[in-house]
Amino acid sequence: MRRHGVDPDRLAAFLAAEQQAYRQAHPRSADLASRSSEHWHGGVPLHWMSDWGLPFPLFLKEATGSCLTCVDGHQHADFCLGDTGAMFGHAPEPVRRAVAHQIARGATAMLPSALVPEVGRLLAERFGLPVWQATLTASDANRAVIRWARALNGRSDILIFNGAYHGAVDDVHVRLADGVPVQRAGLVGQVYDMRAHTRVVEFNDIAALEAALADRGVALVLAEPVMTNIGMVLPDEGYHAALRRLTRAAGTLLAIDETHTLSAGPGGYARAHALEPDFLVVGKAIGGGVPAAVYGVTAAVSQGMARVRAEAPGYSGIGTTLSANALAMAAMRAMFEEVMTADAYRHMIATASDLAGRLRAIIAERRLPWCVTAAGARVEFMLAPEPPRTGGAAARIGSAEIEGALRLALINRGVVVTPFHNMLLAAPTTGPEEVDRLCAGLEAALDAIVAA
Ligand SMILES: Cc1ncc(COP(=O)(O)O)c(C=O)c1O
Image (cartoon, rainbow, N blue to C red; front, side, top):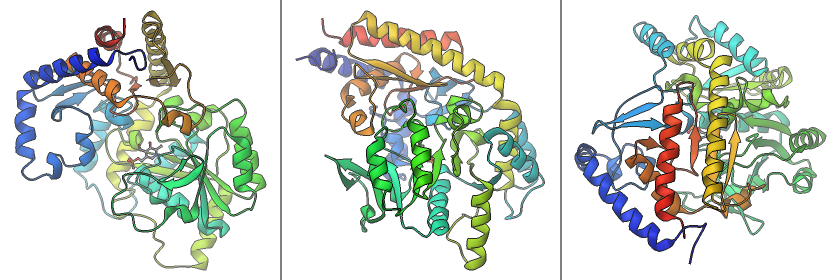
């Protein structure tokens, strides 16, 4: 029986052949995998690195621009780009220069570096919020925002959208199962009930949001402007206006997490669509590979933060030792001034739009019940005829077997795509040759597995 337009027998035979081809083409990765397993848990320094569904991990030799070279010398067109961490290409020259300069002068000192005023100005100009704090990761930034919001309005609950991911943030690991909040499956060592202070509703469901905010018990709504971590779920027309109106009416603060949707334009999705968040979180790509994240706040929130600190001085529970270090500041300045430029975005978005059109044509030619979604430089193909409107609907589509086989087949054809929901990013360095290679690889793979 065909699933998603794919013949399961052809899929199984194809997968076995591709696994064999991968093993043969990557003897050095195989050797490193075997040696790494001695002293790294699961053979990798972060267990996510073995989640690609490959016979063994692909070991990196080097990556520049949109090209990733593995230790066996194969060059890959990289559309994963570190799952957005390298959204603007690997090793951008201005960042290399800035990092080399700064590292020779000290990377971290628990003191603000001389670049701090300028980086603050660049953040305010780009994203439109006046006041900022820096963290090492977007997870840290989201945790900080949740704490500030609770402290500011004295409420304990937060609200997130079903299927959301905002990093390694405990409060957010809650989902809906048949409309009922449950803790996310697979959490390790979870001992307290995170549902106690986390409410969950479906994205794009205005009535559910209104009902969940009605008792004025929610401190913060934490939202991606386009859901990206369950496959992409775009907001309905008018949804963000309703979200802002309802949060304001309920005295609830609104945080927009732009970590992934920075793909939408130079100031992210929020700037492009004139959203008015109280907090804005941006992480991953803004350091050009150097760990760095930031959160911006309105003037009113900043005043509230000062009041909270004055009322309860002492250890805040917010911040980590290496946050806001001099190296991160140097990298961010180089990124904002020289890499994340309007020209770079024009190229990224035009390339992604071309790619999305070609993917739609490939799907249509094969009459597959699949669709393509996009947010600026980010494109995904989804194994459903229509883009989902909620995280719950998005969670029900897809196929680990089909997507895993395609990912492996693409690597065998010199293309790397993200190991989650077929995400493809166009960098400023992504050219037509890379797009051609991706499309040719996908066509070859699909022609081997689609049902007659
Ligand atoms: C929307 C969003 N926010 C935050 C994070 C956390 O980023 P990090 O893992 O760098 O802390 C992620 C990670 O994928 C994300 O997708």
